[in-house]
Amino acid sequence: MGRSAFILDTGKTRVMLDYGIKIEPDHVEYPLEFQGMIDAAILSHAHLDHSGYIPHLFSELTTTVYMTPPTLELSKLLWEDSMKVAKLRGDEPPFTREDLREAVRRTLTFHYYQPFMVSDEVSVEFTDAGHIPGAAIVRMETDEGTVVYTGDFKIEPMRLHSGADLSGVECDILIIESTYANREHPPRHELERKFVERIREILDNGGKVVIPVFALGRAQEMIDLLTAHNIGYPIYFDGMGKKATKIILRYPDYISNYHRLKKASKRVIWVRNQQQREEITESPAVIVTTAGMVQGGPVIHYLLRLKDDPKSAVLFTGYQTEDSPGRKLLEKGILEVEGVEYPVRMQREYYDFSAHAGRSDLFKLVEKADPEFVVTVHADPENVELFAREIEERFGIRTVAPQNGEIVHIDL
Ligand SMILES: [Zn+2]
Image (cartoon, rainbow, N blue to C red; front, side, top):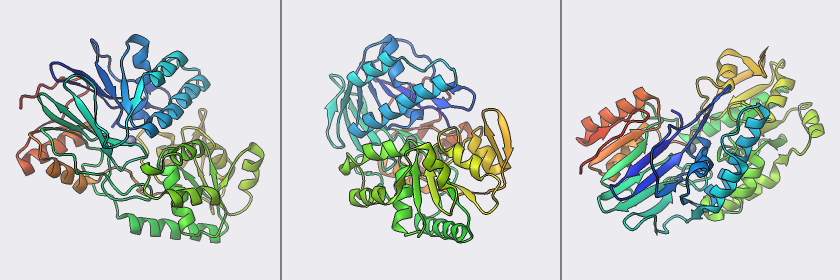
């Protein structure tokens, strides 16, 4: 798991696929350096582990970047935020303001199902990846054959998406994410029911519920879910998810139920200032706020206020990476803020609302793509390798699970 960045070289055209960073508590991991020029860069979706270093491209070269319109706006939001975060931590920013402006100027946006050429020989089409708004499965027709890059995808419907469209995934070479190749996710419906039941229980018992969320996708899923279930207590909405929601609501075609999200956004209470933040924790309520892995943002404020209250709970709804403050809080009950460790008496639970395909859906996509060759990427090394081996055994397809920096030659 980490940062995604690939270069597809057909012999005539070099296309970069994603260029991500991974933000750790004390440092940032950047993608590996690459040699030479590229003809185009394609961004599958706005998450920083795919988009985070795109502006840096423009510190050294000039190229065109292609993505969907919501991906551009959501990426801009995250790019600006990562500059702010770097500044707060006293780190070197990942790129300059000028790089960022240049990246936006050099971006061409295309909607799903709107084919476009990135060179004389490579034509590209985006289809819905069902992951977050704007996320695309990237289909590339080249003289050498058809390549599909899944980015991150999910087939099972969520509240915001009706699931990835697999109608265009048939290809010669498939580059597929492998995040959950080793396990299934619980069925959504049941998970939602359990989650909401638990929230009601905590609130009825006089506790408060803090839900740390990622700004893109998960924040909107949560306000949609909570308002749809009529929790009966105030639901507060804080952090960067608010801005992301405003952007997403400008693209009704990129979510499955615009009206429901619009309604949800009106029913939750948007937290606007520090005074409001102080008052919120006084009586039972649900607080949906960034950051999803407790790396910063208003969630810290709420947790510091509620940490000694055993009636209150923090409910995680997204994966917590190994070294994240969220993982430490979830597993060890320790909240770390600016180097200080606080023991936490709040209840802590995790609900798997993942926006990635689970194991059987990953295989389903491979089967549908029916490729000559599969490249498994974007998971822990052992998972990527195991998934590749299993594809070979099950379908008799040639595979490779490349290491970071590895160059793979594929002859069809
Ligand atoms: Zn993603």
